Image (cartoon, rainbow, N blue to C red; front, side):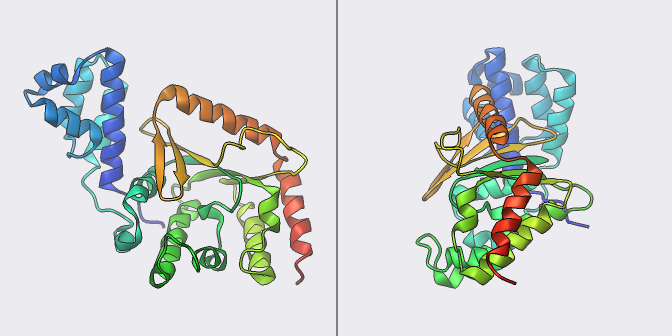
Length: 285
């Protein structure tokens, strides 16, 4: 059985996001929130940024003062009680850049994910050889760290195979990705076989965006949506040396609409797998 993907910093980040959203939704200031706990304005700011451990009783008091639904109060207080456990990716901490740490933690806590990728396969879909070929001459990863960065990527993928709580994962990939010869024919043949194997899992859905669809909602670039059982959804957009976390509900709604439109514009799952099989056949035995 896969070990639980706990991450205290990611949990604090999620809880802080929820506390800030609840306070702003109630029209309260941080100063007013500080009076509820009898603390400083700075402490409320740190709690909302996830810099300080949020105690379940303090979370409950703040949310009740905001008029939050009792079910949500209980949900977030319970989430806070789990924020003091170990970090699952600690063995790889030295090769995880600061801007990526929160995402790795959130990904481990998520119940579902949607990813759109225009140029390369998403990290959760990559084989060891494909990932290694991508990183072998990468500017962001020193050669000495490649094996460990690939190891982390493979460790992240285990959420797809967790028998007790698998990540429900959906990806839309561009057809051109299937033709990009990362690592050469043998590596790509193995990678495409891996996609076909993954697609047999009930929790994994892979759709191909055909070249015939010239204009669609993914042209602005890659993005990932993460959904959680006990917190609001988060959007994630990565760039060359950093990332943006999308938290505003309206913007999340926009990304969710884009995901639905990408899903509709892409080939159905069966047709997508046929495209992958056809491409795989051109690469030999």
